[in-house]
Length: 201
Image (tube, rainbow, N blue to C red; front, side):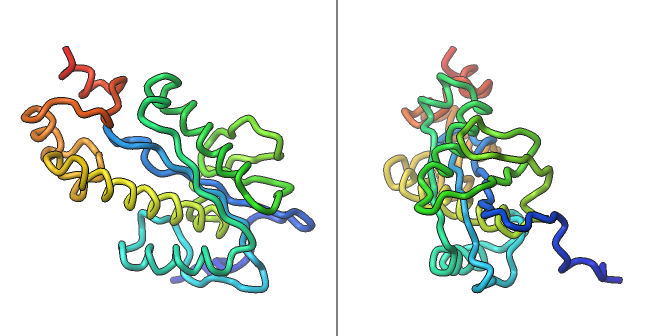
């Protein structure tokens, strides 16, 4: 039986200009980690927003286009493989999130962050666990971050076709590990990640 309260706001943020923030690409062995920040327009609701991992690729792409068209403001930022190796993935993710919020053309009064911790930044923030399936703004951010990262990996695939990034997006699949062992570590692999570090030895 469907939950009758599904359309009620879970959180009361009256008077706040909210941006949702989420990331994509913490787990992969290669490529950047991306973050997005989105301020939705209450006058132009977008139907079907949810956690990007629960949407098909064509649906994500369609929603990403709608978000970019109808949101009050949106921004996408990243941290490179080098920054991930220098900072660690958690700090790099927080930095990408902060960059996304700071790049917004409209300044929010509150940033709602997917997960259990918030980046240090000027805007007040609140972490919401599983926020990408609870808060429309975070769902929108998760869709923009995921589609942007998929596009980035498609470009990296053209540069490094031997790794098949178009198939695994840098995640440590059996195919990726086999290609890594065959071709060695590329400039876009995260050298601080254990499977890559082991091959460098």
